[in-house]
Image 1 (tube, rainbow over the protein chains, first blue to last red):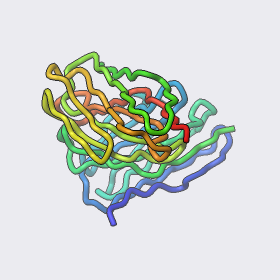
Image 2 (image 1 turned 120 degrees about the horizontal axis):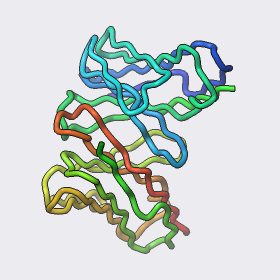
Image 3 (image 1 turned 180 degrees about the horizontal axis):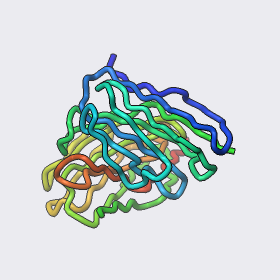
Image 4 (image 1 turned 180 degrees about the vertical axis):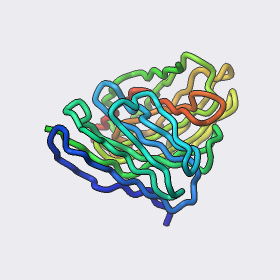
Length: 114
Length: 112
């Protein structure tokens, strides 16, 4: 079954404590992306990756890091989380980086930073 | 940068009624996608439109992209409680397919 998985699904942490949210896909897709969703602001792209070792900033990259060492994994790293990073995070994949290709989304990770 | 607007922001309809949600872009759309989201859950892909004037249907949901490729509409016929959720339009922000933007969403409630 084609899947995009995220872990953890729910996380409560404190300010400044480094955390990683993992994203994994089994569809051999080249393109992967991270979004955050906030009330009133909708979904905003954080980072995306066109392929292994190729990453680029989206609209709201501040405070986040990513890495793409393998095609199937695209972890999102918060080196020093702050309360304004409390949000619902989604990982997404698409076959390649060409427009017109459907994106498939993970189930989401709800993060609360105290 | 490209921005998407959706209207209405929220919608409450009686079961069985038809409804339309609109998505308007500030720039020409390269690819326009409709997703549905149950509150706090993942996004479910509904349809993708690419060509001006294109129309697609799936069950009771029809999506259209205007000829100028700057506006799309999602129409639900004979709504059911299962249609309730947040409807999001998304678009490729450029013709390279790298950046993606979403509209703010339309929250639909269907009263039985």
